[in-house]
Image (tube, rainbow, N blue to C red; front, side, top):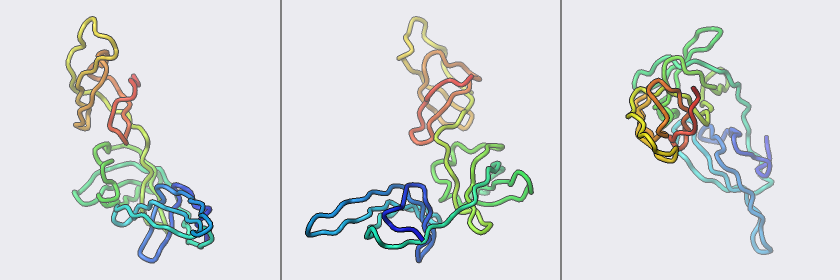
Length: 186
């Protein structure tokens, strides 16, 4: 059990209808007329949908401690994405509504941290960046500064804007949140 006032981003709570990951937590101090509130933005780990809830600071909630295991992405069957345990080689599915927009970044062999509750996978930790190979891009324009950008197609099919010096087979780092180029890795 944890007091609502002690809840932090990233925690997982067990409520009446399932598990929720705290996406944002904000404490709002009250005035003379109104009491203080803890405002939480929550992600439902079964459906992938978001909701907002308010609690009084002294309200007790059930926090869940998850086991985190780095697993390898194997394949998807259209409904589930399958990850393999590195030691037991057992495969675990995560529904596509949990993976969401991150699906475009998954490729065979990609390592990702999966969160387990009582032996069952319920969520994953999305990395902030991924490194991908450039498979198609135009030639750089001579005399152009690094401020000029061109289109590059990555190995996962994503098209992004990259600086002029990027060539085919370069590895680039991409933000998973914005889907934008960050830097050349090699």
